[in-house]
Image (tube, rainbow, N blue to C red; front, side, top):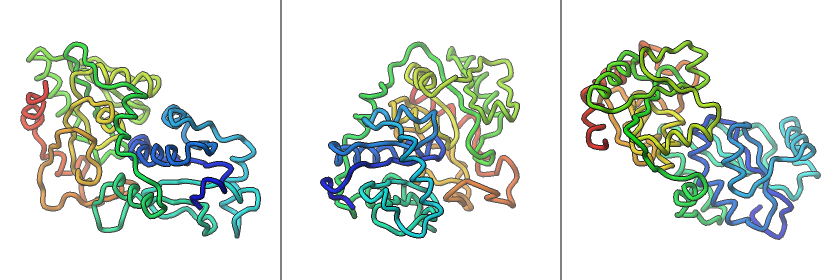
Length: 307
């Protein structure tokens, strides 16, 4: 269902991680632009709500949200949702809800291929006759700001959604020391997962942003960023902040943040994972050799080309 005159509302759904949601933002922006006269609602993690509010979408009302929850136990599309379009990007299989054109699932991963999710979302929209907004990145920066560096701070993101995507912490510590020796200001940035794991910043300044708004302010002001395949690196790239992204088990062709310099160990077994959940690469240690093989010298060389 894509007839604007038949719709009473559109629900934009995404309950995944920060990076996955940011990869879907261009699709949500394109859909919101196409259906600009149709009321739009969102169901997402509370921390991600500002990214949907920027699309002139409102939080899903309790009654509508309850009806949507009922989809997962329904055998057919409920009459109460007859004029509602539900849009849900996803990296794995389609949720177990009734087969109906009013549930618009956008697949972000094709088995055994390393297509970028954003490109797959573009193709899914085209199949529905929904134009892709080529200016989505400019629109994001207009809404959330862009890179305006102050000082020589280099933000270091030692964590990632899965521990097997992380560079050895001692390498980050070594990198921080060498950055400080050249007059730059290394600052570690930890998220809830890193705090829960008890990750230490050592002797270096450490920040734990209270919100994504605070994180975005830090990213815009930084000279550069360094991190693994993780959500804050995608956010940095979308704001225009340059940096170095460290890739191991995952493919930079599929997951590279916008505008980042990519560093890999170039091992023949990598990439080995399309989706980094569960026990992927079970025969590899932590960190895996494809990340442990990245030297501090290589990262510094790339950073020197930026800062």
